[in-house]
Length: 389
Image (cartoon, rainbow, N blue to C red; front, side):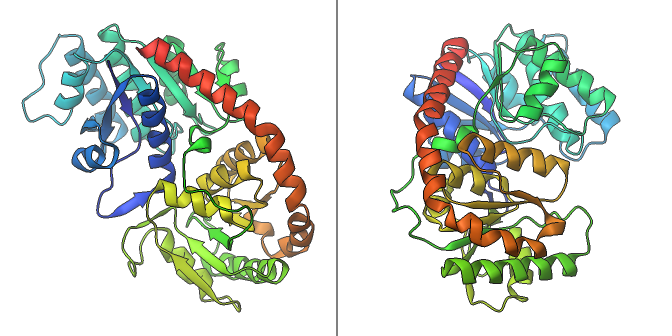
């Protein structure tokens, strides 16, 4: 049996997004363990087929459309799934439409977060749900963040899609509360990528790991870069660890300055402390690196997801309400609270000694919680497989 799974995956132009691929990776692994094959919906189907050893098809064709065009495209695809119209042979959505003939269900993996700042994901995910409904197929949403910014139209689309879903999984308290306010009953758990397999590392054996996003929410770039550098210098003194920058959205080639590497190079230019760049590789490499860190400083979400279950002390930097929701949601289940506004980066130096001194306590807290979170995640995937299979 096969499941059609959509994630924000597919490496284009050699740029790899660790977090989006990690959540899809976790879904493929968990479904395979339960006897289900995956057909992926991808921006680069050939690359996804090779990376995961699965079948893959193109996305639905919403990229680049304005909202009016996206709404028309949505109705066209639902009509095609319902047999009321026929897509042309070269339509990018033909792969999805054909795949729906042979699968037993549809899975929305994490990634492509469903907020109005990314309307392409709103239209793509809700349209695929409607196409599945037209074929009588069950739908599951796993490991999602919804909102916090949602227009009235986007909220209406999402509410309808979730109301028709067999299971809805969310990963933060605020997302859970939002879905509850819609009269629905989601299941909350840690991020789907929390338990990915990776090379075993000794705890706290590695670097002061830094992973930054270029999203400063319109703050002055140079001022934020300089403040971050002062904080990292202070952290290096406290930890006495080598400083390593790791791009979670970055090129797979050494020396290629794109994605998060751009902001990393800017911040490094302000540092007094020596540092180096770790080239983006794959999810297993990113997981192992995060789990080995003596301290993680991150405005990216998935380094926190990978590090917190191992009890790595984390200082997470929120640029806005959306990033604060996600980072807080990643830390709270493991007994950590280290989320600060990026505006407070320079002042955060005073927090670092106390955070680092609690490393043993944080490892113990994570260990105490690990088995329960892992058991809930395993039960979730059992239920997903039973629903979609």
